[in-house]
Image (cartoon, rainbow, N blue to C red; front, side, top):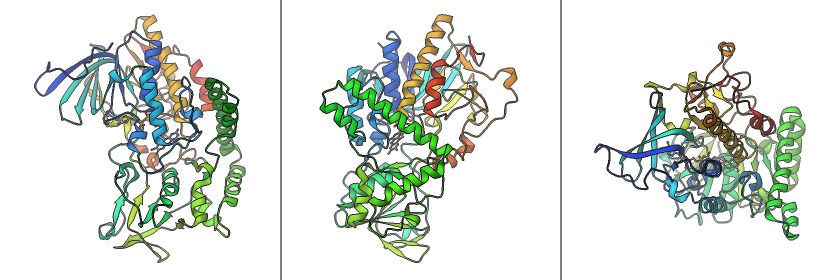
Length: 504
Ligand SMILES: Cc1cc2nc3c(=O)[nH]c(=O)nc-3n(C[C@H](O)[C@H](O)[C@H](O)COP(=O)(O)OP(=O)(O)OC[C@H]3O[C@@H](n4cnc5c(N)ncnc54)[C@H](O)[C@@H]3O)c2cc1C
């Protein structure tokens, strides 16, 4: 059991209360944090831990995003954990993912370890004390708390959950209707009889538009440039068949995981080795689903290589059905100005709107905007290097989870948890209380590269913030953002005694 109490006792000063000590402190109760807690409890049942989350409920991304139709892009056999079979359709609604996470919380008895509305604001490492001091502010009461921990596990995701990315457009103040961001969707928003313009063409737009198309008077997708789409069946036929044969769910889960992993490997490989072939395949598989005479070149033929940004999944082609039925349409143009009645684009056309949805994405947040310090020195991450996308050079006893861009995020959660379990067990065996990634002498002059190579992945939220992020090196183990196909080999075999991890 944790020594961190459910409600903080008044032990410290009036301003900041001492909330106790835990062996491991997990930040974030999303897919990563809940997965981390499962593996920790499973492999180290005697370790104490808490999960702190700034939100008032579990789920992270799936709690923040509650706009109509919110769903996964990935299949849930790989987006689900390795240890818990997925029993639903391949592509799942946000609520179904939350229900799955609730089951994990129940089965692992994690509820007692999660503290909601606990925002971590700062973390300072003391080598003398071999511990982190973690400053927390309660979102509901403003109360300040202080935890200490031997190991900090950052599972905070990659974007700011309270401040979505809202570009400014000319004339926005003039617009008489309502402007909504999907990250902050008003629960009671009634779309009946409303003309809706959705700005954006990524996964959010592709999800939202079919969900509201029948309800609103009309929905216009307004995009500056096209994205890639892929339209698999919402219910994978192999899963349907295996379930009809009454195959144990554990087997179905594993078989489908292998099927989808192989499919994703192939897509990722094609995007590098034969991008024009993949481009052609994606465009041609969409064409028959679009209305007759639809201008595919203008609206649905992207200018970048497939997978430089995420391919948006359109299960059963529902976005295209809305276009065929005429409840939705697409405009590809740049916004010149908002007007009092809608949006005027460069062609001169004014698109009338009662509601404008800016499906424009995220503001990236580095480690949950926590201010880090090591032995009194603030940590400037821009000068640090990632160790396998799991730890950061010069930062002791801190690991983080950053999932895949292309494969399911959760595949990496399980792999990173295995690596951490090996690391923690190794520290125990060595009698070490501190582990720090440090460049070896021969790596001192290693070229440091930006967080992401734009040629590989150039989503807006990463490109806007590259200059604020930590770096990668040009060789193992200072790399990250590798494909799952590489990492599922590399991470389990990673040598934890190669001299890049310094134990004390
Ligand atoms: C709409 C949408 C759909 C997506 N679909 C897919 C998909 O199909 N497949 C895929 O692989 N990926 C998808 N993603 C990416 C998705 O973010 C990841 O799959 C995954 O949910 C990330 O989980 P996480 O637990 O790491 O982070 P998050 O889900 O972001 O959760 C992090 C949690 O940490 C908390 N937190 C952050 N900072 C602090 C702090 N300082 N103090 C306390 N708590 C803090 C937050 O409140 C949040 O609850 C999608 C993203 C979005 C927005």
